[in-house]
Length: 275
Image (spheres, rainbow, N blue to C red):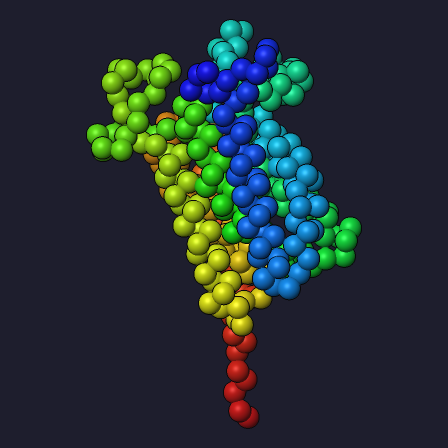
């Protein structure tokens, strides 16, 4: 057994995968409870789980392939430029893309894939997508809060060096002295997502008479991107595109668009003046 997993015969089982599955099960259980609280069929949550998992993994992998961190870039000796390892030399490396056991999943892509699968499922079963997106929102936040601990077992998702008492050391070569301690970004994001979950559950009960279908999902699309946007300032290995932190930029745009849409749909109509 290592810090990353253990062997069952010749097969190595990663703690990362186990933690992700625990997060998925916990999220599904919470979504089922929320569906039943709203008087809906909670069994549908388990029916959609497999589709959400498949689409989420595909989306997460695609996101990683398109936005790899700088530490994964490879040098093209002919041009002297750093290139995406999955398209080195301009040639797609299909086997590397498919070999998911080498790591590389992007949470934003998982969310996008899961949402698309939920939308498809709702269309197929003639369910209200916005209503089920609200049910899923706090559950997704819980799954993310648990799943981020997989980054701890993999010794990844750490931030800049720090002298704070909760800083962590990294076993792998970081380019810093071995005793250097780093911000545990996985912990920060886990706590942020956990707080997001509680906020969404509270709002769903406290403002049940004022919320429209889809509001909780929009709030999720404000809170989660805000957390990711802020944490990217501490991250050492952020994905860059044309000199821009692509993840941070996309999170900012998503958060602003969701906030604007939420504001517009709750804006009170102007009262016409009396003639």
